[in-house]
Image (cartoon, rainbow, N blue to C red; front, side):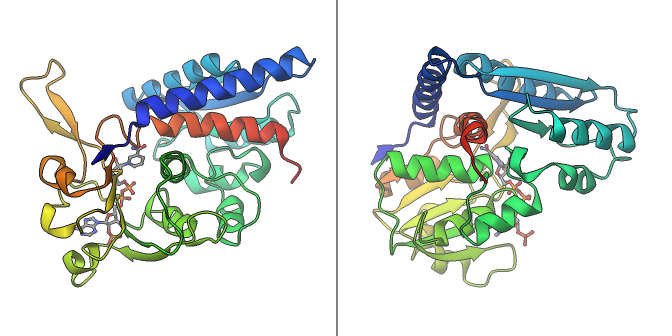
Length: 290
Ligand code: NAP
């Protein structure tokens, strides 16, 4: 069994990006510029955005953080999004979700110019991905694809089973694994109403769990030799930790790992890849001609 080290892979990717940026700057070019809009003071969002700003520094990017209090109006946010769409000094930008309840998230997302949508959340980017056009692929599925690629895990013609059909993980992952230019796999998507879930999972060469239910995938659901990718990150109480909790994946790691050829741990697997993929998308934003 090989443990897929997302932390080390993400660090290597950021280093590669930093080297590329240093080369661009040495040749008189401009640093990639990522802007982030953060509304309110939600602890999780503050941490995510701070980590993104830090990753920009590591990669040699310029970053701009635009903050609003949680009473900002939808119109003010829409105006800022439109301003960033037009700002030629900004290559890409994100609006950190979730937004306060009085703001329509979908309306804000749809206002972002797809050519600057480095989160890959706009319907235009999702549609372009579905038909194989150049696009920004959202960070978590892109990170999983990158892990499979860097660990030389064959995907072409393999049976990939994805548990979960959310818009941010399950569905884009299924599209990517299906596409000839990415996974080129045979794909099955399971969800909470799937009959014979265990039997279907047991036929997977690559099993991707994106459910949000700790230790849901057990050894009797995994074919010996399969690759198992665990996207789940649920906080479970743990009195032995200073924080009082630990992150638990969707896979019962201790019983499943001995069966696998490759497996991602939680933490340290898929999670660390996400921000490095946002950085890669921002670099792509400076190079794109679409
Ligand atoms: P979500 O929107 O809650 O979707 C969960 C999916 O799992 C749904 O499609 C649901 O089916 C399915 N599901 C729930 N219970 C099930 C069951 N008993 N059997 C089969 N399918 C079941 O979650 P998400 O946003 O995709 O996130 C999933 C997990 O990944 C969470 O733990 C989240 O924290 C984590 N995550 C991690 C990262 C990262 O960077 N590491 C990024 C994003 C998400 P229905 O559609 O039928 O309801």
